[in-house]
Amino acid sequence: MSFKVTVLPSGHEFTVENGQSVLDAALAAGIVLPYSCRNGACSTCKGRVVEGTYEGGPNSAQIISEEERAQGYTLFCQAKPLSDLTIEALEVRMASDIQIRKMPSRVMEMEKLADDIMLLKVQLPSSEPFRYYPGQYLDFILKDGRHRSYSMATPPNEANQVELHIRHTPGGAFTDHVFGVGATQMKVREILRVEAPLGSFFLRESSKPAVFLASGTGFAPIKAMVEHMIATGDQRPVRLYWGGRRPHDLYMDSLAREWEGKLPDFKYVPVVSEAQPEDNWQGRTGFVHQAVMEDIPDLSNYQVYACGAPIMVESARKDFSEVCGLPENEFYADAFTNAADAV
Image (cartoon, rainbow, N blue to C red; front, side, top):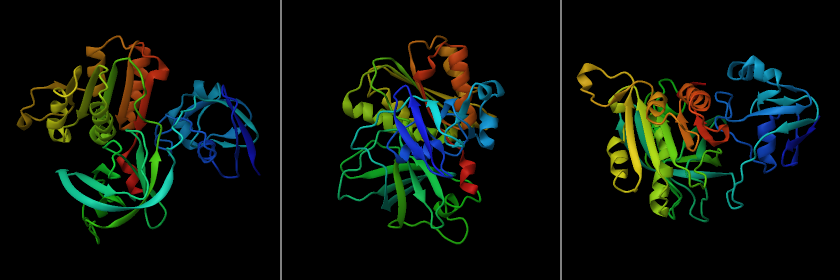
């Protein structure tokens, strides 16, 4: 049985087939609702059901408060209709030439950036331009059909090559292969199947100053955004806060420092949460989103772009809005969990 979903305030409609989530059906119909992880680990796809009944799924209860659930809020990547629905959600306007498609890719380069981080460069088909927004991600499609998501760390280019920063998850179906743990070792020239571009995390056109907030390999999509800004001459004020447990987690620290000389109003603030005496760390310590709050207590006229572990993203979303006055619709995020590779 299928159900009709009407989106407010746009009035757009789409059909959800039996077993589909609201988000998957919307994307299939060309209606882009905000989304990131697609597995219920973040709240990017949170929206409100105004009318109708639905099954929210187990993750909704973990991410969304009981009070919000009583008001009809749910995660659209998990919600499955039990009747026709009317929902409230801000649609994301995408350029007409940005189309999600499945395609082969070839590994062109592998470089260890740290003991547990591998840089991959993959070549996508050159028969037609690969269009995407800096900040979006791709999925590797494994042989058994499972997907593994990684942010693209470079803006679009004529060569149709993308850079990815892969953190090793011990026991992970994909990352063990990348790092040569177990029976197989990824090799240059290897062919992988991908689906891309995905996600609603990208730099919006605005004159507002921006805070880029990253933890770990959440730096990858931020890198794509900054390199796009440099290439296009975007001169909006930017403050980049990049957090890691130890200094070596900031695996492209020197590159981030170089950007201060390439953009007119750019400042980079590295933050380490678990520095050890042997690190001889002289910089900022603590939680990375709290460093933002210390430096910019009033975020009411800012945009924030946050990428990294869900706990960091959700803490920043809550605290920036409640304490620093950031408008909720100016917080853009991509949350992910490395543990997803193990399932």
